Structures are given as structure tokens and as C-alpha cells.
Length: 325
Ligand code: AMP
Ligand code: MG
Image (cartoon, rainbow, N blue to C red; front, side, top):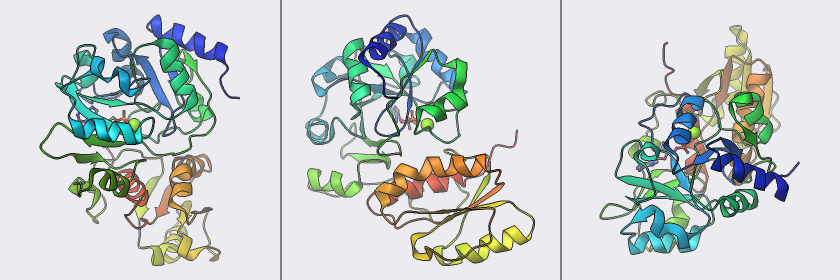
């Protein structure tokens, strides 16, 4: 059930009192804290099990508040904010006076976003300040895209969960660094590279890690319990049946090109042909395959254009090497 005005007022109170509020955004659910309260911000790191050197994104109610949270905002950043806020775009800027170093992992830069979800915006307005909000899941695991995912994973560690329904975008924001000579994409996400380039009127660089075709090079993140293996789309059925034959409980994210193909697997989730629908569903599919007891997930990378770039980035990270603790 979507949060009421009363729930939102209560959540703002929790933030003022130094508590943690899980909030819906259009990308994924966030674990919110008062950005100006170092103790509350530190608690988000503890609850997530995230190293405190990993900087957080500060969420604000509108671009008009930007001067409180960032210094020397370049014209490029203003242009992008004007086009894409509220929305799934995060800008890295020089740290402003209201941002404590706890929120930036000690950096003199800060990541800022105006989220495009009515409940998030209502909370930010009611609260009146900035809210740090990493994804509301344990460090390294699959991001939550429903309030139920948050409750299942974090339970009592969060003081209040605001329900805003399933997230519309389903993958995290695109992070653009505007502190260098030319803007660059640090993480592909809900705003596509093509849309950024159309507004900027020039090409924008994307990190090479997201373009490497070799799997297993990046430490795992966005990862379900089941091991994730990436295969060429044309081999998804054969590889699934081979692994199933070896005794694995295989879940397959069946590529659109193989829609309707019979496949002997423990669980089959057909991937939608639309990348927007795929991005919206992706984290839910991974959670579903875990829930169904799969120990291996076979998936294929979509074309790396539009939202396909962000989906491929998350799948590669999900397939990355696991820590051997
Ligand atoms: P998450 O909270 O999981 O959506 O991730 C936030 C991401 O934003 C971090 O993993 C960083 O990569 C990025 N980020 C946040 N602040 C900065 C910053 N000041 N400079 C560069 N990247 C940042
Ligand atoms: Mg995260």
C-alpha cells in the first residue's frame, strides 16, 4: 500500500531523530538517513555492511537547493540537472558546506540526485534537508525494488519502511562525474548514454569495465545467492540443460531471441524484449530464482545500447568473483 501523507510526516520525524527510513525511488529502494547527521549516516554503513569508504548519494528535493550541497556547480551539471531531474541521474560535484565527510567516504566531491518518485519527493520536502540513501540491501547483494524486498532483507534494522509500490526503472541511477574537463559516466543506469549525449551535444565516456566482454573480472555486486554465469544468447538452452544434467538446480533468464523454446531447467524466466521492462524486472527475477532454490543462474547480456548498457553492467557484476570469506 502506498505511503500516506501521515506516513511521510512520520518518516520525516524519524529522519530528524537520527533514524533510518527505507524509501521508494524510481530506481530502487534506498536506505535513507539525514545527510547532515554523521551518526545516522554511519549507521547506514553498519546496517548494509558496506565499507565506510564507499561514498553515498545525497538526495535533495530540487535543483534549487543544489548550492547548499555542492560548490562551483559547472554549467554542464546545471544543464543535465535541468533536463533529467527529477530522475535517475546522479551528478558528482564538489562537496558543499552541508555535506559531512562521512557521507562522501572522505572525498571532497559529492554525488547528488533529485529522485523522480512522488513518495521520495514528498519525504524530501517534508524533511527539508538532504537524505543519503544507498540501496536498502546488504552490501554486494541484489538491490530491492519493492518494499517487501526491503522488509525481507533488512527487517528490524530499519526504523520505518515507506511503501511506494514497485520501482518503475528498476536499476540504479546513472552517475555522471562533472568535476573533470569533460563529463564522464561512472556507472551506467536509468538515464541512457544516448539521452545524455543528445543533451550534451557530444559523446560521453563510459568506464571500460562496463564494456569488457570477459566475465568474472569485477568483484561481485548486485549478486543473488545463486552463482551467475553469462553465456552467449544462442547457447542459453544448451548450457542450462548441460548444467542441469550435472546436478545443478538451474534458473535461466531466457533471452527474448529464444522466447518459447522448451528448456529443461529448475526455473525459467523469459526476459522481456523491451529493455525498460527487463530493467524493471531484473532484480526481482534474481530474487525469485534465489527464492526458488536455484544454485546456478544462466543469463545472457543484452545489446549494450539504451538501458541494455545498465542491464549488462549489473549482470557482469552479479557474475563477478565472490569474496572467499
Ligand atoms: P549506491 O549507493 O549503491 O547506489 O552507490 C553509490 C555510488 O555512487 C558509489 O558506489 C560510488 O561509486 C558513487 N559515488 C558516490 N559519491 C561519489 C563521489 N563523490 N565520487 C565518485 N563516485 C561517487
Ligand atoms: Mg547498492
